[in-house]
Image (cartoon, rainbow, N blue to C red; front, side, top):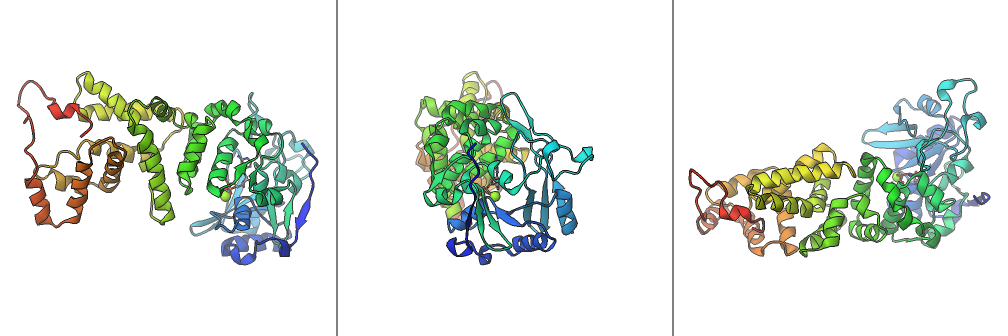
Length: 449
Ligand code: ATP
Ligand code: MG
């Protein structure tokens, strides 16, 4: 690694000011400072403030050990095993306080900050065969903390004591030049933590920056390392990738870098086959829709995008089951389980979301059956709105006819009498079910309702 070159950016030479920092973050910064510790803002919040963007959250770095941080703040809890941190709670806002970490390779023996003879505090960096870091609790100096961070633009330190920014890795210039540069040797750093490849793509798309050529070069070759990252951690990253306001461009960049296939292999399979045009169009449409909603400040549920991501695969599997004799509802139910089970090996989706995804999927086949009280009942379903949006997206993508989506749009706009009138005008249910023999109705064979 290149020698660390410190540069200090004076308060007058950068745009970060106390007025932009949340009151709670300021309380933590001043608390640490007044107790005699170093007190810096670091990471995404400094980067975002420099870019004139509102930070998502505020992270603090200090030379105080986690236990010492806890002694300063009553409202503080220590969390994490892989990466021990102090959380200071202010209602819903949490300020994360991290003790300076040393880069991999350093052990506790050389750590001047660890307490001698206290084996509980002794730590080593644990890594697996491919170089992935499994545990990272060796404390270090401010400079060491900077070089173990991921990108130069994420390693700027705003000093509460004098409002100066310390830059050890050239992040200030990279930010001015719109460059995302990984700190140190790119291949080693991606091997240590393959999620950094996803983060590079995320920051580039979200912030409109370019990944430096040397940092980008090894990504395609190393993309396979993502397969080894725990599925739950990948899910956390997926949420950030697609809910940061730039989902569509992130998705395109992920596919271009061969990374998407390790997050959603089934979707990638559908996309690359493109037998029908709809799965290929549906996903980008949903991503654009999500970006628009976020831009308008409207709420989004991750279950919606996730349902879209796996719809093509669920549909294919359901069609296969229908062709071997199952009725549509049963086929879709089994297909949903099948697809979600496969997905769990790659990006594990928590139950609270898979439940919603299933409901949205199952409702797709109920939208066509509107006679009698069915339409009224369907509208009462707590997932109706999301499922209806999903239906309209399918229609927009060309997967199904426009008529159904238009009908449901109108049905929601008119009063009860007009709704009844709409139902009366519907053609009678074709092929009424007989009591015996065949259970499957002709239209139940067809998903393109
Ligand atoms: P945002 O919160 O906007 O997504 P961020 O940069 O703040 O972006 P966080 O995940 O909150 O991202 O992480 C805070 C900081 O911790 C980062 O800016 C970076 O310095 C460091 N960091 C996070 N993840 C890693 C990683 N995988 N490897 C090295 N450093 C990391
Ligand atoms: Mg952050």
